[in-house]
Length: 129
Image 1 (cartoon, one colour):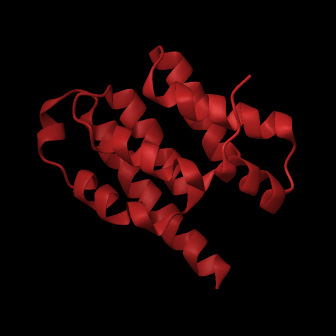
Image 2: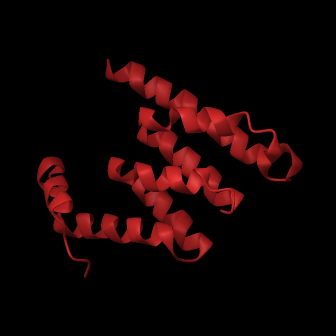
């Protein structure tokens, strides 16, 4: 069982989520930093599906790290788009136009994921108004 922090308790109260779900999200956040690629990808998907905005800095760290697998970086970009957090726009724009990625086979996937994520964030921002 993962120990609950003050932030996790506050999230649980504000979102009215169960303790089980808060613990599940905490484990997913912990799995982002270490674990196999498929476990980390599953954690990214879970956090995006749960609309966990506290994971945005972690996702941005994965996205901006060139040593990370392109598959994980693209998954992070898609998750940031689903979360709709505007803090990620500048990083997504930077990586969406990245010329270094053209040299790698999977670079197109990262660039397109960044571009779609920017569009998703802008649409979510408009719908909230």
